[in-house]
Image (cartoon, rainbow, N blue to C red; front, side, top):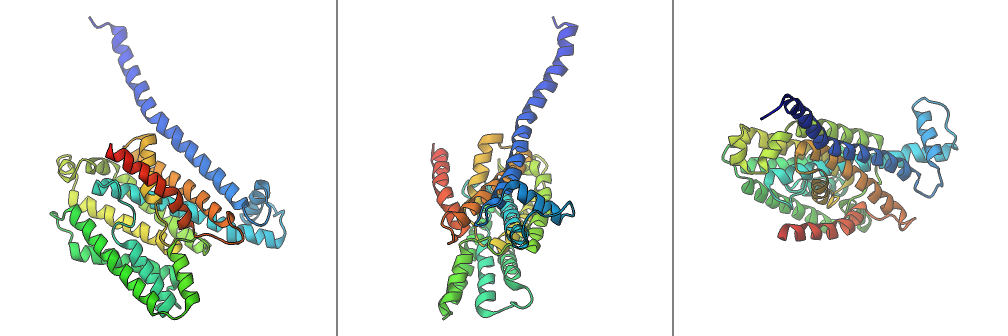
Length: 356
């Protein structure tokens, strides 16, 4: 026989269970944001000039109109014009790549999917090579603009070849993206072979490996805007992404407009990825490994997984870039080399867990 006290206890028990279900991921996300802020503050201090966190904080505050900077003009310029934009760009690019990788892994149901799945990285590389070696648009759009347009051109070619009909299969989209990526990679290789300037080729190769050395406030603003707007669009489709993990048929049975939602997600990830690659080159493994790690931490629900992956990607790339510019100082290593050295063993662990 059910008593009135037990009936009264049931809503309380459900409320406590609901709170505990969300409290753990929320605490982890809050801890991640705190770790990101600390990581950015410490990373700005890393470099040839020995600066403390307090000095950096007061310098940044001075540029925001709060007090005066305690640093000499040269050191103050290093903080505001070089280190801070680079650290913030690393955080923004890391968040962008982790977000896009997380979405594409759910959308394609492929554990090896990454942000460069649709040929965007190769298209951006070809655009950058065309600007540097041929001078196309060098005076108007510049290197980042050329890379961004190249990435969008590659994605547009994928859409043109695949079509956007309801019956379009994910396998066809992925294979077309791979083919388009190989096409643009071949174009980049031909342009590099045709160039007789060894110094220019070396600079292009360095950029292709991934580098944040050209960070500017304008590029920070671009990627942050793409991450915020694109991230909100992707997060608003969290329920649809949960459904897509069970297949298109399951998503349709749950009321998801499969074709429209799929292409909205593809277009959004393409724009965010193109913007990230345009300012940093192709940085590998961030969008591939970080989402898998966060699934083990917060579960598979994308309402929690997307923001957590973004924060984790930001923290990871901030520290990877700090290592890239300090490990062999004064020589700087492309950040893509560091992420590959860390990401390749992590990928092997992912493959091992999937094979079990």
